Image (cartoon, rainbow, N blue to C red; front, side, top):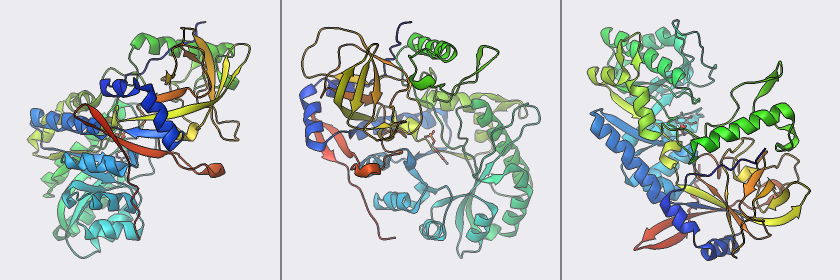
Length: 468
Ligand SMILES: Cc1ncc(COP(=O)(O)O)c(C=O)c1O
């Protein structure tokens, strides 16, 4: 078995940045390892693509960046400058959006809310995406007129023998009649009304069922005289991390055969979410589909143009016919290629079949407990002759499970202490999703990289704090 190589997609601007190994080394020496680099201009380019999609498709669409995907304030500011709104999930995120001068009609307050978060969102006239019927009642009991997005979940399509996983968020779809009654009784307290879902899955099938269910409800409610103006279809637009489909297919085949054979290619028989039944591999794997040909706005279009059997047209057509505003909440798709994480090698030890590499950083700096199925790039200060080298990467925590990749990587040359790994495309849910101060490690620095007449300017990201 040849150890698979999985080459990441790298934006030309990031390739160019990484080609200067002296600067990369200087950054590690100045800010310590690991260091997170963000390229806000690339986020702005992603925003433009979504804006153009809505413009060209004649949909009345609005985009809300899911702030939870990355903690950076500088990134949020740049995204807000493009005119894209912000979807927030906590009072601190809401403060960030307000501080960045995002207008109230461009903020969606989502997620579970304590009273101060809910009241702050109401006072500022944001869209409130309701997490429960009791939250809806609390909103309706607060004086004033409110912008309400009724978040539904647990959709069921009798025609499709598939049920989405139960969600803890939103109002179960089967309670729609109770909600309808509340809305009818309180119409004068509502400024804008929309129906909403977010499916936390990469399955298009589940999104289609949710979309069909909400459109069905909107038609019913409109005929009953309820003025529904918007539909919010959440986030989940895929991005592609891997250059070559063949590399991805080979990787999956090697992982699967190694799970069956117990090959030491995998660390401690890690299963990647597969299991064996009757000697055969089963399951879909518990990882993000790192290679995917349909991404971003194309993925959004696939969801919107699929024909919905019950409605016998596409969601896109029906949304136009019903003159609904469509809202989306992309996180990952707006951060495609926007960030990289640099980590120094602090120790290298040659074992019989592989190099054991210890990094000055750990699995929480890249993601937590999720397998990353794309390789990092090795950056060296000296020129080295090609010498393909298999290795395992471990982190700097005193935890057995601090294994950054539970599969061997194939490096182009022999690794050495103080070489640097660049992990690519880490802005969304990777670089800061699980960072912690465990064993008193300091949190990594986030740096913003901007281009100015062919030069890079690098500034520390601001961490805003608020008196709550
Ligand atoms: C309510 C909601 N909206 C939007 C998103 C963004 O999803 P994605 O980053 O996959 O686009 C999330 C992510 O968890 C979410 O919970």
